[in-house]
Length: 286
Ligand code: NAP
Image 1 (cartoon, rainbow, N blue to C red):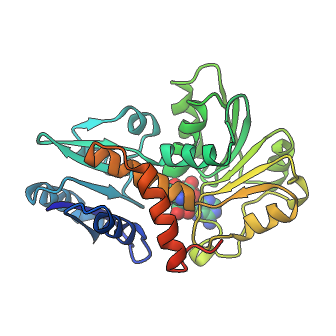
Image 2: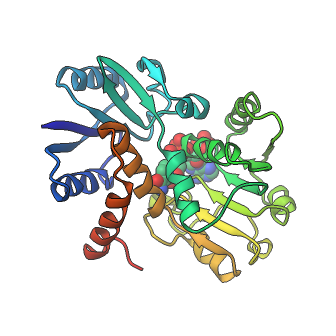
């Protein structure tokens, strides 16, 4: 039996075990996917134990996507440029670190026929997901990205890191202030919320963008999938913007993980299977 799992701090709400285990059963794959909540001081031991137990791969989530960087033997190009790992793969005795968030984000955009080429974007957040979004956009020809970050030093290091790889394209750091954000909103095509503002304890809250500046010219992508429609997406929809929640990205990044681990293409089978499963279970309401 092939073993997989997810490592993080709080995993009570993770959908990954449900999605992965149901797909294994559906596709007759002899495999199991477990949930491993870990305190930071035990992280290294847990990764070593998984290796010892011959795990094939694992996902890594908040808050360890960056902490695990020194633990891997080999980083994929994406993970290295993004500066975060969300997928482990033990291959020939070495631990590979990958990042499937960028592929998940791009596939979700592709499905709704939004192409980042020659577009401008405003991204809220400077964490692992925001960096994956910036990488995905820049490597697909996005012209300019404005990064609005609460933690300005994190935002600055994100902008500086990408400047090393993408010379012709521009990254600008914005303060976490609605006046500054309002000033650039009209010039962007895509607005991405890559913060937890709108979920959990922050449910009902909005990123600092005055709603009167959002219009039908915008595509608004909130990476949050629970709730399915955040207050930010509701507001954007009311203002006439096209909107997308985090579900498609979640499914596409999960399919990408399976492709890394199994070495075969599963997206065309897995994504529609998961969609119908989530609808049947009333987790996804359309
Ligand atoms: P992360 O690495 O912890 O980064 C979170 C970012 O949000 C940081 O820049 C953080 O700023 C900022 N932030 C947190 N709370 C804030 C607040 N109250 N006000 C302003 N900024 C705040 O997390 P992540 O992995 O990037 O995930 C970010 C979001 O994307 C989460 O909601 C996650 O669920 C979602 N996500 C979705 C998918 C998907 O497949 N749909 C995939 C990955 C992530 P500080 O540094 O100042 O704390």
